[in-house]
Image 1 (tube, rainbow, N blue to C red):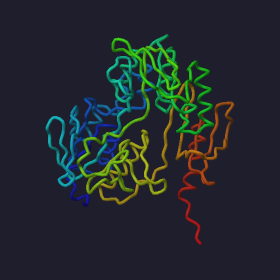
Image 2 (cartoon, one colour):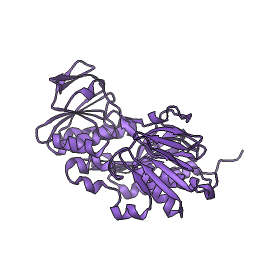
Image 3 (cartoon, rainbow, N blue to C red):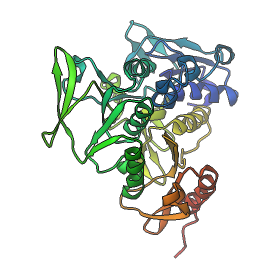
Image 4 (tube, helix red, strand yellow):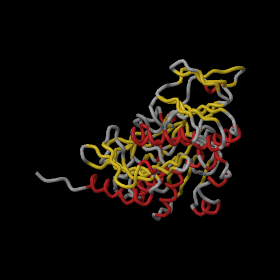
Length: 396
């Protein structure tokens, strides 16, 4: 399909990735029709602040809106909100929706994101929370307060952020998870150990290296968590942050390849005229292989790549991944891929001062850089990843 044939683009998902796709198309001169279908009633909002600024009360919900009403109007796109996609016919490029709509377009962009994984039985209990939507954040914010006991299940990025925010609000927080330190999977044992020390100093209890056997309850309300060690943690609230599942169930009969996301080629194409973007997209990165990234930066960068490909620019999407996390007074920034078992070397600052930059090498090649409260220096070191990835191959 050449871009001159593309009179109508349908974006499924009124998310950061969906909105960025619309903005990129308009910025690159696309004048055709654009429709955005969203399952929530909100206009696109930002998710990273949900576990931080919105949860802490520093921001009111409207501050998480990504664009003003005026900015959205200027995009000249039709937003159909509160209506979820239920099926896709790839041949005719038609999406059916929960309310019975049938929407056809010349190009379809799948931006349906992910949903939280849950524990068995959690949906029947009050006092058990997840964090994905604005409503989730506000519900947890209302329930938190000084002296409230909270068990956060999951020691990844989201669980660690929620624990830090809840602790700052005066809650008594315990983190539970199978790994031995917060974010160990994301940053490796060395830095995760430092993060664990920070949490412990701020009063967060770490019950790590263990999983959850079951949620305990009385009269339909959660009262505690039983660990795989059989220890019981009495609690007022439980927050489950054990990862996310790509929202692809509506594509089950579409013929599109689904495997931990919508599987795409190097140009984020899932089928002829069908693309995927953001958390739901698992695409062939020409340097890292098949990857799926759940972060805000990728939502924006991938959207720009998809817009170009819709408009006929034939370009693979080969980003250097980037994510950040704020916990207490620590800002961690990660560029590239931190492979398990990588060699980690602190190249600037020092761990003891909690201001440092660490470089991650696999087989002698720099694949990732992590900074702790050293944003500028970290950004400069990103070049080393580019040099390692995109260096011309030696001949011979």
